[in-house]
Length: 136
Image (tube, helix red, strand yellow):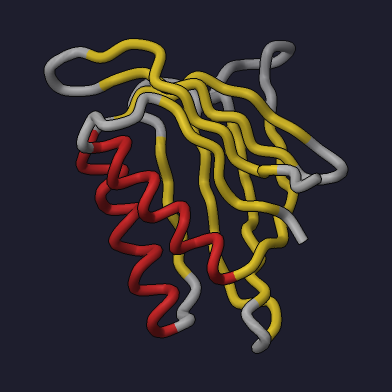
């Protein structure tokens, strides 16, 4: 059975932005956060995924409009199409409530195409939740 590394669910939306529950997991670590996003940031992510699959040049996507921040850096791990995703999370609070985490997800290039399709459907309002990035 395959394990998805990314789960996203829309919690609520306003005219300009929306809140999502984003869960990111590796075999060794999992984070679950609520983020404020907008369609532009998700469309930008989708576009960067397309550019990465075409040129294999690493890129970083940063999200979070209010408090929690997540940074995902996509890079080619192996020339056989294995992709690494560096996950960096910071809830931007003061100690002792501060949470910061860095871990890696390993997946395949075809999983980025799947993620791109799901992001497009999410932005268009066709779906309000999805799972993506099967780990290898």
